[in-house]
Picture 1 (cartoon, rainbow, N blue to C red):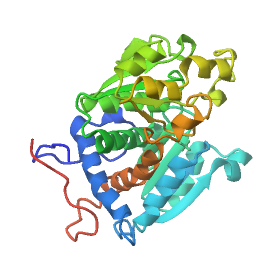
Picture 2 (picture 1 turned 90 degrees about the vertical axis):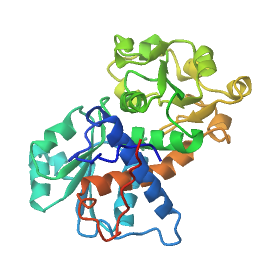
Picture 3 (picture 1 turned 180 degrees about the horizontal axis):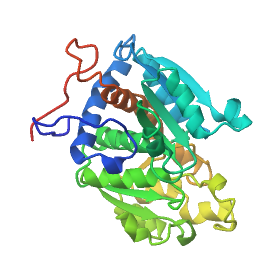
Length: 330
Ligand code: CP
């Protein structure tokens, strides 16, 4: 458990990004996640905490992990769940985002999980409806539950976030994960280095607040853990030629078995989906030094914790249907 002051109270209504969450908010979510992680290991991993809640998963962009993980978390907690996919909805007939969300709200939703290609859509939705809004990834802005599950996995596997050296490698320019990871990890006392070719760095990369490197081996030698990021080909259509070829990228910035041999304590993570043979050599992705599938398992627990806290159930939870406080004094 991470220390949280005794007087602390979770008072967030939404999860739009980790920029809005304090160090204690993040620590509290991670502590609660530990309790939900234990629920997932029970023979019957179901609790009735959200049985009076209705939740819509509003996905305007493709997803495997985040969408399934949110839905599984909701069902494990007994919520009524509605799934919305832009491609099979009336969006294809021209319905606006605002009309879509207001129609959904008229069906009395308590919480909305949203993924959209445009940064700021979750913030916009807070002005359209009363439901709690959870950002499941907005363009290249933030992906807060990914960063929370990354931090949870790091805490679980490495023992502490305080002083941990985390390198994030790859397509920094187009990544929402890197933004949430940097914000969250630094609030929790970790040190972050970003690394990639200059063509995949944002303008003024130092403004992200992390160390900046363009040399893979130097970065891997510094880090305790390397998080490889996917090359986001779908966001680069407007800027062709950022990298000469995927093969050349792999040669210069792909993490290979030779790196695991060179740096025997280094651990590997990846938010998925992996481009095998691009960001990671096959054998690296499948090695026992990689925590990639642990990240996916932990994602369900972290999302259960976030849903629990934002549902308001924690305030009325004297019955033990959910989990207890997760507070420890400093
Ligand atoms: N990590 C992640 O967001 O994966 P999906 O795009 O499959 O949800």
